[in-house]
Image 1 (cartoon, helix red, strand yellow):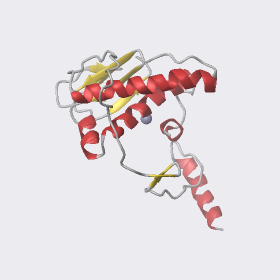
Image 2 (cartoon, rainbow, N blue to C red):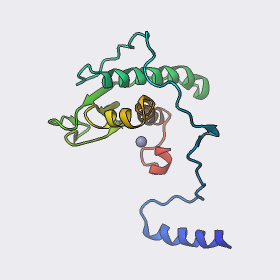
Image 3 (cartoon, rainbow, N blue to C red):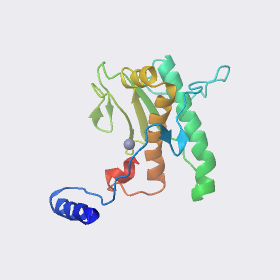
Image 4 (spheres, rainbow, N blue to C red):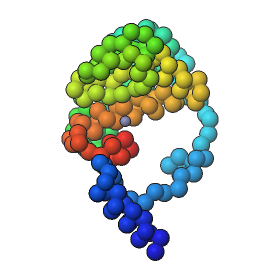
Length: 178
Ligand SMILES: [Zn+2]
């Protein structure tokens, strides 16, 4: 009975909302991820490992850019290995990586200025992953740890993978963002 009430609510919303996706929310246990206990083991760059040496446009050569570029290299290595095995396609690396400082004068990426843009994002028009080294990545690194920086960049690269696999650009956000 309760479920029927929810469905009625959804159908009413479909008429009035721009993009509603049906489904039933599931409770989330914040102490577990994918069924595993959350722990705070080692995170970040492994000592003694050489940098991947990916070119970063606009980078300042600092530790955050170093962490970000190496994270991108690791994630791209993952997709180079797993995309062919899983989807029978070769993985094409990102065309460009951009580091910017949201507190400084902006630069244009895909028609938008990075001034004040505390974010990390993927832009399909230029096949670029960009990150704010000024505020966002240091905040993630300091408050959660280096793994948070890697998770955010892995997410953005996930959008590039979606594009390479042909996910329509007009797909609902809830599909693209998960
Ligand atoms: Zn996203």
